[in-house]
Image 1 (cartoon, rainbow, N blue to C red):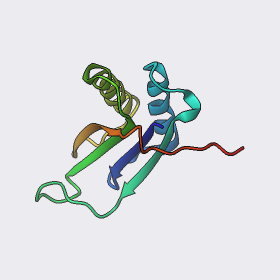
Image 2 (cartoon, rainbow, N blue to C red):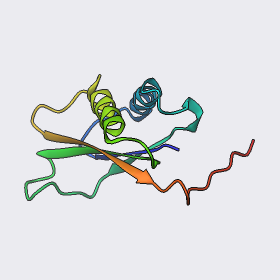
Image 3 (cartoon, rainbow, N blue to C red):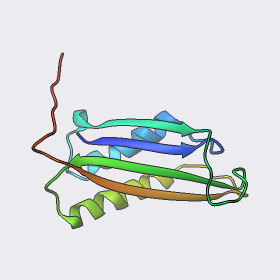
Amino acid sequence: MPHLVMEYTGNLAIDVQPTLQRLNQALVASGHFEENAIKARAVRLDDYLVGTASEARRAFVALRLAILSGRTVEEKKSVSDLLGAAIQKDQHWPKDVQVQITVEIVDMQRETYFKVSLQ
């Protein structure tokens, strides 16, 4: 915990590892998560559609952060804002493409979440 999933459309040239590093650093900086507990991954989407326009003209990055339940709305909003700022930093967005960025915070039920760390 937490689990961060970054989905992005294939018409964006995102340098994945530095971007995930920046997102993880933002999560650590929030003060809510231990560095070694963050699990981040990226999923490139080659089959997608935004509205009805040509896929070459539109794109998106969707961040979904699953965290254990119990945090306040204010804490979740703060983390959402940090991730939103971090995903925009140092990116080279195409000038002729409308890019939509979203951040969603999802609660995982603390009572049913299982985790074990093996060496």
